[in-house]
Image 1 (cartoon, rainbow, N blue to C red):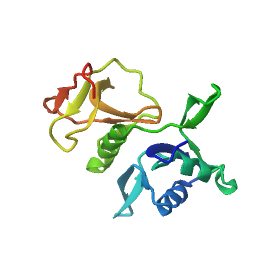
Image 2: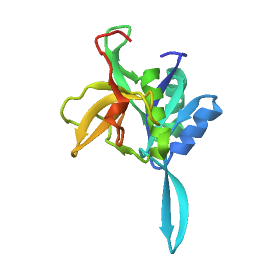
Image 3: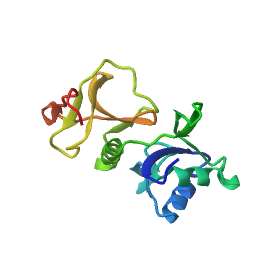
Amino acid sequence: MSEELHWYALRAFRGRVQKVRQAAEKAGFRTYVAMRREVIEQNGHKSAKDVQLIPQLLFVCCSSDWLMKYKYQEEHVNEFMIYSHKVKNNIGAEVLEPAPIPEKEMECFMFVTSTNNGEDISYYGESMPEFSEGERVRVTDGIYKGAEGVVKRIKRDRKLLVAVEGVAVVAISNIPMAYLEKIDTSLPG
């Protein structure tokens, strides 16, 4: 456990995303929920509504100590789960602890899911879809300039996949190939 701040992914149950988000923000931590604005027309009237792009998913930039203390307070135990990974403790046994998300990965994910109101985004769940292998690329122009991901062909359409490993994958369509440059993965960084 650590007092260092990292991004962590949480899956909130039974509509508790806002409750958990407010508690983290009240404690002074940053949060992120990918949202999309949907326009609904009913009886000739249009109204806009913000909905979660990825239901139940919340990201919190906090210390693992705070996250675990909050999670295991009696009233919060069943509100959410923390995406975790196995580590060895000081006696060599494998234990689960919150899995920190690399800052660059989280920044790219937040960027692409908040650009263009999520209109070009499709959500693919917690793991990379099994499609043909693609090259790692960076977007060089347009509204997604700077985003990095993997190009894959999905249903005859080329898309840029951006992932938070083990948590979520989103696919962006409508990026011209001229706006993509291959990233040399043999270089460190």
